[in-house]
Image 1 (cartoon, helix red, strand yellow):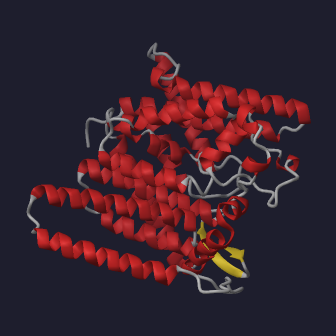
Image 2 (cartoon, one colour; image 1 turned 90 degrees about the vertical axis):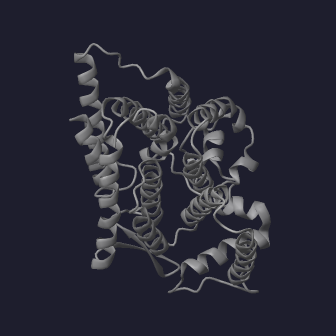
Image 3 (cartoon, helix red, strand yellow; image 1 turned 120 degrees about the horizontal axis):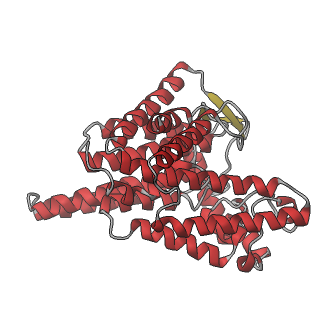
Length: 385
């Protein structure tokens, strides 16, 4: 039952019936999975404590609960407690997926099937014209069954990463098809942050494949030279194509992914790092540096009156550092390092793509974020196909 409800969570997570930030149907399935697993372990006389290798993340979660609780009392605002619940929820996911991986060696295979169904579901929704649209600049961005285009893009991106991990381990040759569909869907969302993650994934896969071919010594040296020159020429051409012309502005009523990329480049080229920080809500780290020491808590954006944009920090690392301080951030970084050290190169490619993307969006509240980070340890638990 625990495995069944976990797989049901993987499928239903894509359907946002309620407002963002509330418990969805998929989230309830994950909670049921955790409860079923807890009941099974109690009946078998096994511990409910997390594995020793996850104590750091649970210590981190304990500190987040403490910090948010203090700010909730100071300001008399329960909003801070909501973000603590997000951390507890994702901690329960880490606990659940750890033990389920040990219990069911076929979990990755079954979850991969559901993830493929997810990508096909979003494609069919797009083809039917029934997907939701997000209005921006009087134009539209596609968001499928989600409440935000970045939510959809991140969900599809995670499916691509997890399916890549599966295909690399078990030689699933259908991955190219789902990769192509996933890229197409992400382009429809016009999410530049997720597109950057896709680029990192693609480059990483290309590097690993080139290394494999090079080691095989089946490709003549002349081909490598010509290929390298062609790649440089294509890179220069793409750079010139994407570089915004003087006075470039996103036109109201219609814009493409290319327009959004040019917009981001223009922000950086004209305003530098500071303008980019303001655009992503990260100027708080400059205006309120004292919170690096003891944390500002997660929530209560109305407190930061000096900022130009009243929004959360769209950078996972900076958000954790600002909200919870230096010591908890080091604990989290150490835990992540423990998950990825000594892992296979293909796992590092997926993690690198995720972490680069996380520099532009806040996605650590999504369980799939943690699933990808855990992949190195989880694969050691899977013994079957």
